[in-house]
Amino acid sequence: KIMQNKHKNLIKIFLIFIIILGFNYGVSFQQFLHYDWNNPRGLSDSASYLAMSNGDYAISSGHRYRVIIPFLANLVRNFVQPLIPSEQLQWFGGIDAFSFYIINYLFSSLTGLFLYLFLVKLKFDPKLSLFGVFVFLGSRITIISTGAPIVDSLYLLSIIIIVYFCLTQNTLALFILAPLLILSKETIIPFLLLPFFVKQINRKIFGVSFGISLANFFWVRDTVSSWSLNKLEANDPIFDVFINHLKSGFENIIQTYFSMGGLHGLFSTFSVFWIIAAFGAWLYFKKLISFYRLPYFLFFIIPITFCFTVLSSNVGRMLLSSFPIVIPFILIGIDYLFSEKNTRQYSLNNIQTIDNEENQ
Image (cartoon, rainbow, N blue to C red):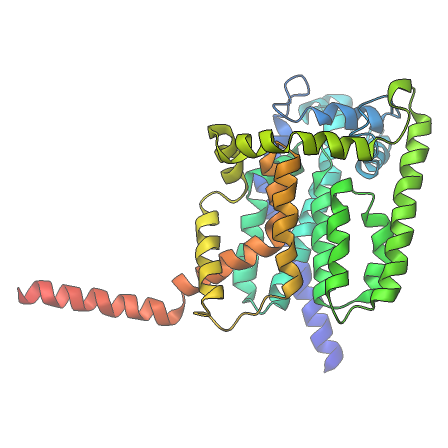
């Protein structure tokens, strides 16, 4: 019987993943199909990743250490190119765009699956959890991360993997994966501190993994620097880059929170769902909805993502990092608004209003 339940759960998860794959394809394919390498519209880093996928590391030092997706795109290119006629690949925007899309589509779909498992673990109803996945995948920034040749899809997957295994208190999984996840993007490092705030995680064991991760991080950066022919940026500039971003902090705050472009960037992540998330947070902290309990480590994501908006003017891509805490609040708000009790009360109020109008 236990084995039967396991098989049923696996089949259910497989079917959920198929649904996620279908939805993700539906929302991201047009972004991929119409991406223009010559007019990237704010995604100029895509040219760096294309060069890296072709073995050219003489590019901006701010981009050249994000090696995993360009490396995988190159593998896909070498595998697909002999199999599909060039004229068909041209319809897909060329082999380069197609190779990046395959990798990003897979990673963002896996992010959706881990997000579903994470939300179910937080006691959200499976249907509500799937809705949360659709909110994430339907975000304009997620669509861009999937359809455009950039590296954010692996970064977002890394975030939800860390958060999920913190929630399930899986020290071993975190120990094994941390040295790989740290290579997704340098902004993942603050998220790798989250396990230290989970009491049930063996902090000594994870601390060893975190140390190995940092060593691996700097070793990879040093190795990639040795491949670059750009002598002006031969050394790892991460600390210089951080200081330069910090110097622009005040300007970024003004641009992000006090300009039309900044407000557009804010709403490009979750749009009107920001309002529902704020409502859900209000319900949660006022204890008006007591069924859900969010683990404390999740709340550290809020200052992390706020700091990112200070360091970077690309507020939309930065704020999407908050999805593991924002989406639960969205679902709390949605659940309250459409709960059976509130719906029934709304119906009774409507009936009473109609009766009063008829009596008048």
